[in-house]
Image (tube, rainbow, N blue to C red; front, top):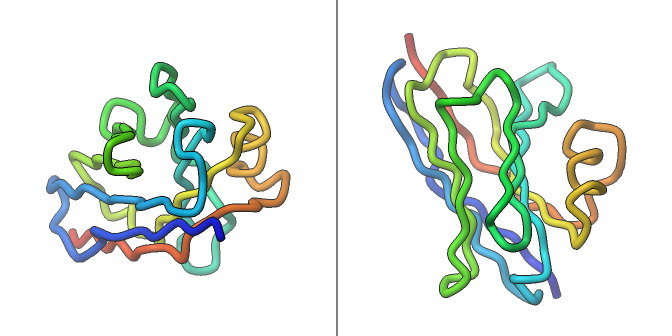
Length: 128
């Protein structure tokens, strides 16, 4: 059974940093591209970024580019989202998701398709 479990969310002041983790199980980790999306109360799903199966290709939303970084550790079957220079508008529930196709994942993270594999989310609150 494929499972993704996020952790690392919490309350942080504006300008601070957090690192979210996404632990994967029940899958061949190296065969999957991973991504993160976020959803604030009353708002649509928002694409945050993706990382390819090899880790060699990353892509980010303009709103987080230069502040957020996605990485993956195959030895731990874990994907990370490092968030720096956090802003109050980054407040949301953050979810990780996976798909064997990076293009399918990117489309789905943008709200234009179904996410077959996703976690339960972790809340990030940035205070001003």
